[in-house]
Image (cartoon, rainbow, N blue to C red; front, side):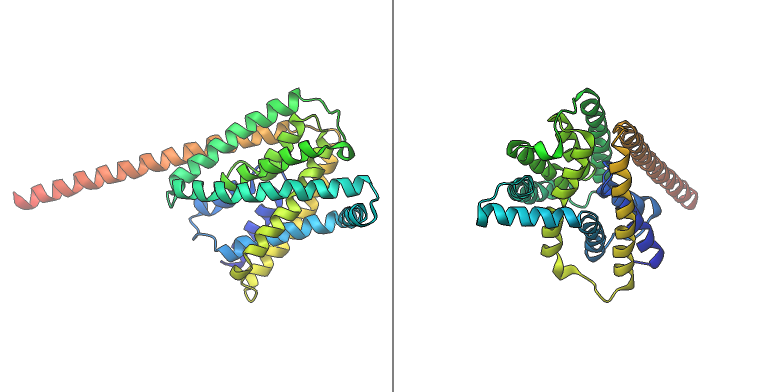
Length: 292
C-alpha cells in the first residue's frame, strides 16, 4: 500500500462511511478501477479506526452523557433520556452483531473470489437501496425526535446494519437512516442515531481485527489520519445539511454509480471476449499458414 493510495482510500472512507452511499462499495470500486492490488486487511482496519475515532471525537460529550445516564439508570435507578438511549443502543447492537456474522459468512461463500459477481452485487445494492431511500424519505413523516425513539425502533434500526455488513453496496448509514425514516424519525435525528449506533459495532469489528494491525506501517497511520479528518467534516456537514435538505441527492448518486459499475463490468467482459476471439482467430490463421 503506497502513501498516495493510503491518502486516497482514507479520504474515500471518510467521505463515504457516514454519507448513505456505501463505503464498502467505493473501497471496492477504486482499487478495481485503478487496477490496484487487493487492500490488505490491516489497512481496512486502519480506515475503520479513523472513522471510529471521528464518531467518538465528534460525539464525545454525547457519549459521556449517555454512559453516565446508563450507569445512573442501573445503579441509582435514575431514569433519564440519556440513560434510556444508552441501553437502547446496547440492546440494538447485540442482535445486529450476531446477525452480521451469520450473513457475512453466507454471502462470503456465495461470492467467493468472483470479482465481477461482487461488483454486480454492489451495483444492484447501490441502485435498489438508492430507490428505496428516495421513496421512503419522500413519503415518511418527521414526527419523532431523537429523544423519543423507542426500544422497538432502536432494535429495528440496529438489526438493519447486518444487511450492510453482509452485502457491500447497501451502506450501513444508508440502511439505518432509511429504516429510521420509515419509522417516522426526522432526518437529523435519523442521522445522529445512525452515527451513535455505528460506534459500538465498529468498535467491536476493530477489536476482533486487532491481530491484523500493522502499527509500524506509515500507510496504516496515514489511512487512520485521512479517514479521521475527513470523517469529522462529513459528520458535521451531513447533520447541518439534513436540518433542511433531504436524502434525494444521495439516492440519485447511488443509482448513477450503480449503473456506471454495471456498464463497466459488461464493457470489460465484452472487450475480454473480443480479445479472446481475436486471439483464437489469429492462432488458427497462423497455424493454417504454417501448415500450408
